[in-house]
Image (cartoon, rainbow, N blue to C red; front, side, top):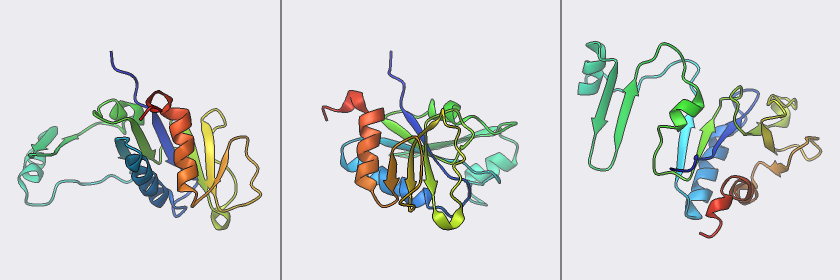
Length: 171
């Protein structure tokens, strides 16, 4: 039986806080430590991965409920759904990773690292039972969890490794 892959959401109260940049830098830092990292992005508005005119786009437009493309080193599956899926359902589909970082999903019942920027508001939006850390540019922010400077990528990566990747500590 395979172990459950840790899933951590990088969340914020609003856009423009630097979630994407933080996540990008954490992926690189964890990868440099030898971990395989999966990434999931939340999109509230809908998206289109198929390129207009390409075969998979044509298959989708013809009515295919699921479309896949398989190449020599990668594959992608687009599955239509009636509602937005829970991040844990999609995370369960990922293979060959040690941890999954998800951008967004602030209402998901998964561990949250919340990004807070002074100029965008100082109120935490994560439910306390899911909040595990805060990355911020506010020196005196009060929170009942570890607080890291936004640019303390190594410190946040250390935290993620210690809390979520304990079983891989011998790497």
